Length: 71
Image 1: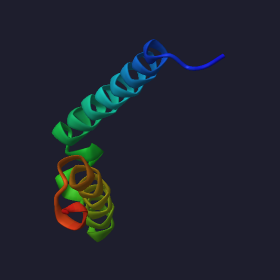
Image 2: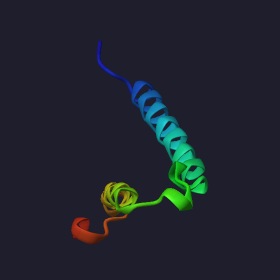
Image 3: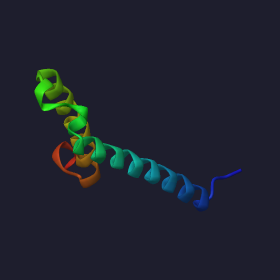
């Protein structure tokens, strides 16, 4: 049975809703300083946050055609 535009729309909206939920969780986690306490911060925390930032930069570069994704 061929997939219809309705099926594509359903899949698109499901993926969008999942992304929205992930973004909301990330915003809340960021507001909580990613579960870190200032007294216990170390370079491992910085490395983890740098990794998160690099992953998000890759996504935003693709979404907005910036960085290495620029045409």
